[in-house]
Image (cartoon, rainbow, N blue to C red; front, side):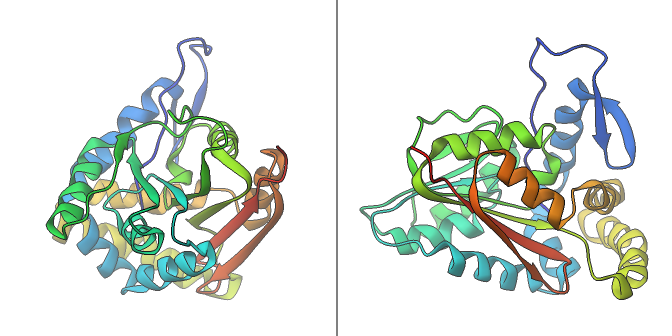
Length: 259
């Protein structure tokens, strides 16, 4: 689970709608609803991640860091970075000569990430920003990552196009996100998602509704093949994905080849 969404440009038709979990809502309302979810859970976010994934989120992120291959001096943008797990790992590898940005549209989540990094003596550039309108120049980053945030974005195609825009030629995009679990495991996973997750949310984060939204938002997110196609449509090449934990999560990657 993570924290990115996009507000709707004023030029869009007032009647446009999108999904918020299983609900259909006006596009202009989704940003505020998602913001409410993450303002609510920010302080207990890391504890809940450990509980609801039995610590597996750390394995998934470690695999992402390994695929990223960050080297000293690289420029990295972590979108919807929340409490800073990936940004911290990238900063260690990029070194003092590198540039690692931690960004999120949700100020509450970004504040938690900033405080954690500061407590460790690590100062990174931070930005509250919308993935659909990134405030960075074309071709600036060697690597762009988004972990558990793409599914919350209103216009995923726009966000992916922006991620491609800010990559250097030869730069890589990594998208870590919940996906479609193997069919034999689906019934048990559904029971867990719609019974245990809301219960944990109520008991630990004091917010059952936000974790019910989490379960619903996962089901509304594109499956592995569909998302791979979306990366290709955004102009990325060498698109591939890796199923983790039987497809519970997938890591998609693509490379910007054009100049």
